Length: 318
Image (cartoon, rainbow, N blue to C red; front, side, top):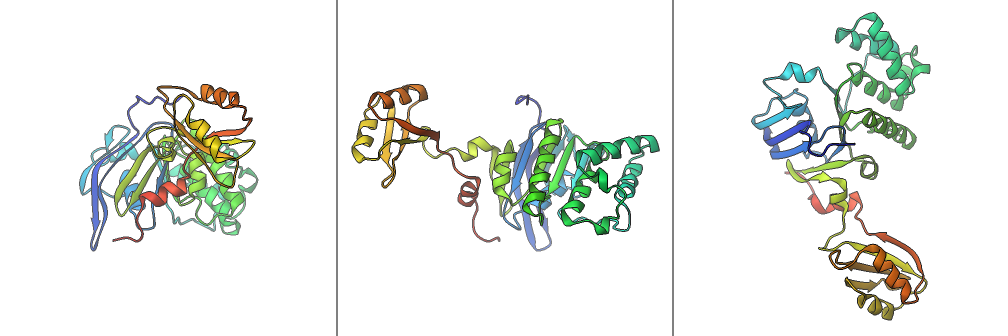
């Protein structure tokens, strides 16, 4: 179980960063909790890659501070690098190597003995389901298989934190689904994962929390469930009954604790909201059935991540 009181793995505070003719980040702040899968979402040019490079120590902050594992990314650079793995959006691979040779090269760079390397690589190839391809040349593999090998390379030092920049870019639907399953397994193994992606529907199902960035500014950072909750002071539900009539909505408005009830014309559905201080879901359902209206379905209304993203981000970049 995730300890919400634990210190964050990533703590970004008031970071700004500029390149020669462009401000990439404007005083951004957000946190990533341990053993979570955190989505990092934004339009092209929003500042996602710049932020990831700052967190993984490839760039130094110009203003503000970043701590990873409670350590400063500038003062404790070497200690942090030993515990992280970074997968860039555009990766170069030694394509004339076999899969095993490629992973063995990077494992050796981390100072692992031959015995350690063989064990680690076997475990990683099993996790990524690439064991049958270990002796194949990388240049002969599909884009999806090469993406898996890039992810496997990130795992050779058994990092506690993984930073993945658009790992599903260019993959077909099946390869994306398989990649997401691997990421779920890694989270279950105790890894903390920060993933940048444009595939919003999959992030909504995959991530515990999300940060939305636009034009170098943070628009939202927190739990997915808070981002996707419906607008309004009280929870909103959609109830489907056996028939649809305006007068039924008026009956629903008279129930204890109901603050609003509207018939969705042309359907048998009604949108209701209630005050949790006055009633609860069980009582609402019992009272609706007591009116003589059989309930076909009942569910809480939630936004889609696509909708929340469009509401929070502006068109274009400056």
